[in-house]
Image (cartoon, rainbow, N blue to C red; front, side, top):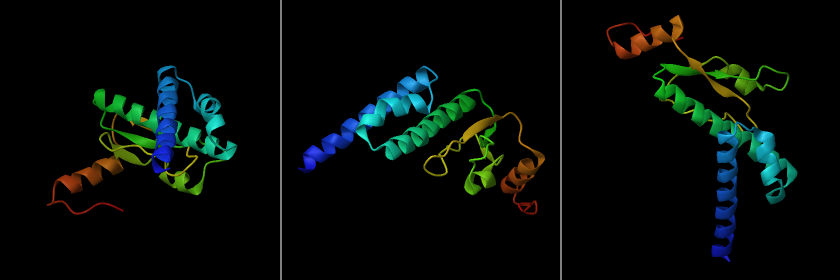
Length: 140
């Protein structure tokens, strides 16, 4: 029974990863992913997986491109609509080093990493105090 259950889980994972790969390659969004996995899950779970994992997958791809382009970092960006939650609203425009992974903040997260070509003065002062112990800590 356990082997059967693991097999189902692996099949679902393989199907989702394949669907996400096609979505990324063809610049398709979560609606495409949802249409492909809808029959494997309840409607609510299918939508949650489609939105969350598309966000995660596209975010990982974006940060990989930023790193390859030798940009210094990325910043958290909400979609800036009525549905933005307090968690993501608090993260909006938070700057991250290019090596930092982007992950959705919660299930159904729709945020994304926006490229940063130069860190803000606040971020520069934080980096300076982190890299030079003789400077006073300027973090808020």
